[in-house]
Figure 1 (cartoon, rainbow, N blue to C red):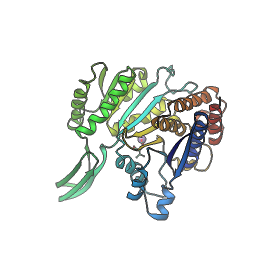
Figure 2 (cartoon, rainbow, N blue to C red):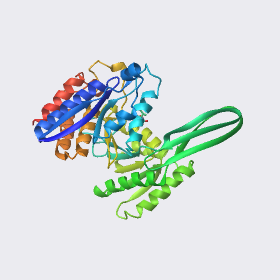
Figure 3 (tube, helix red, strand yellow):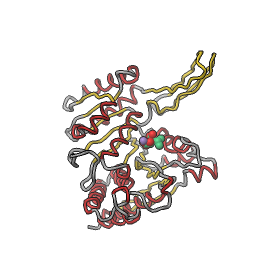
Figure 4 (cartoon, protein in one colour):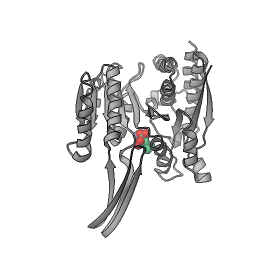
Length: 374
Ligand code: IPM
Ligand code: MN
């Protein structure tokens, strides 16, 4: 029997409840498809941070590098200032493991209602490849008061290091600034990944940017996209401004197959994507390093107000679990899980409140796991 060891970080809020259902379904898939998962639990999140002051330490990150994939619930808690857990755990892992792909399928499963009038499951079926380590997410910024001051920022990545030394002079009372950066290799690799995906599916690839305004950074993105496109003459491409993408997602989602986007715009358009696929409760994501440690999670947050209520939808997390085992090579099991999710939705009897039902988180996990036994 194949053995997998998977570190799991349930995290905050509803994280532990949804992760429990994800584990249940993956364990059941293992029984049916002949693999066994040993779960290695990590306590990281708000409670652990408040108790110990630790977010994700260098030691923990090193330990986690011994595995192929991490299963993450959600982080974020009102007892901790906004951003601390998100940056110290989620972004720390994305950057440390150089998970440069954030893969987010936007697929309206059968049996789910979309808020888009007259759109069907065949109309909403695409995948967003979001760059996941650069852009406005690098954490380089600061504030300055009137007069002369200095600022510094240092970015350390596997691919490169960058240091900004800023000499600031202003007569404004106070300013704040945030630097966005993309690198040639960092951009090439995510665009190439998206082209490979588009080619494998004989589909077209849409690039997202705002090159009409932020010409330096996204003009560079376009230039790199164009030069990578030369290697894929068989893939049709188009460029889109991010504001227009939001319009087309609503008006003509059937146009899209694969999209590739810088980090910040990818964050925004995938929440829109989640809504057109039926809601945040149904949207999974994978933070992928094709040659390293990847991490799978629902794209929604920790919904602290529902913590402990056994109420929220575990499907995004279960689907993220399917993406995880697919990454480990268990394709059949992964597809069977997505099929089981779809059967549950089509059947429509066991569903959580967000889908108009009154079943519990646990009920939905049990129902989906039960369908794997056929
Ligand atoms: C997401 C989330 C994160 C992001 C936050 C929690 C840092 O919104 O995964 O989309 O902005 O990437
Ligand atoms: Mn987001």
